[in-house]
Image (cartoon, rainbow over all chains, first blue to last red; front, top):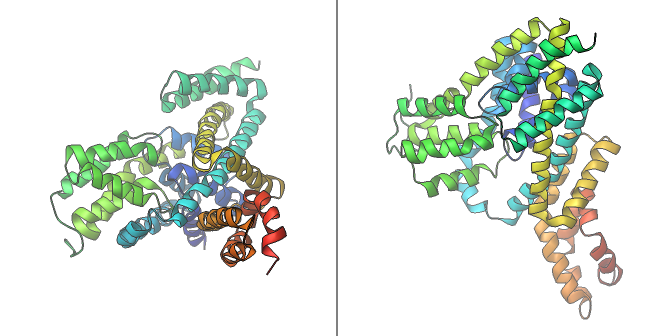
Length: 180
Length: 245
């Protein structure tokens, strides 16, 4: 039952996510946290942290991390199949068909109108993780880390993996001593 | 068992090439599928010459019309094109296995120490970084909305999506589906509205009544985004055009 839910949850999230792996992040969160309660919002943030610190496609990493912790290798396999196989099969099977419809108004309309929903879902998820972090280490520390991370990632173009590693170290080595 | 199926063209590309290329892109590429596509292109077009640049671009564009992660779709298709079903399987596995194994190991370590205060503090210190990364993604999708739909429609769709998802707490899947269904009909609605605006004013109520069913079908299904989109023209329109016949 659990195995099937894992398959179904990730299947649905990825079926709805237009625009590649990152656009499915909030949809996977909705399935895993809101719908199935496989993990809490705060645990989901941890999964994202781990997934973002590693290379490779993001959707498969998230699916694996969640499903493996719930139901071991078989669970991970079920979630990966739900994530990868349907869209891959569709692309192979529908190649000829898609060629005809790629420029059609219907496809254009769908790809354009999914963007605002993903933008809002992503913003909501962003805010909920900000709140979660603030609950753990306080608003001041959270906002300082966020500001530093923004400067490093956006303006100095430091690789996110290094910034995540840096935050891990800061949280492990320095933060516990600041509180007293 | 099945080495080569009839479908795909077998112009070059050994299993070793597939495995090397996909393993490498799976280990080197950061930032999720869309960011990895330039690396895919490099392997497929420049390094191994499985296909030319135009064909790669074409496949990528087609892959983008389908939902789901882009990297695995592309890996599967290229593997299939080179070596059939087994090729697709090999390509996808080579691409996702390294990061899959790593994520299990790393998450396992984190999970083991999850109750220690130091690990707690570490985990929460990373939250703001994730906030920044997700915030930048949200910004990117917002920018793409604006680019695709223009300012007015972008604001309207954000407002409608926000109202549905946050204020009314509608399920994500339902809202996504509603927007997709509306998107399916959007250009028909626009065409209808333009024609109605052109012909409806001075001359023809019959003109705007004609494509009515198509338009209202679109609005009925994706009512939320639709309402915002053509509210103003519709009010004017339904007033004199829609009801006349």
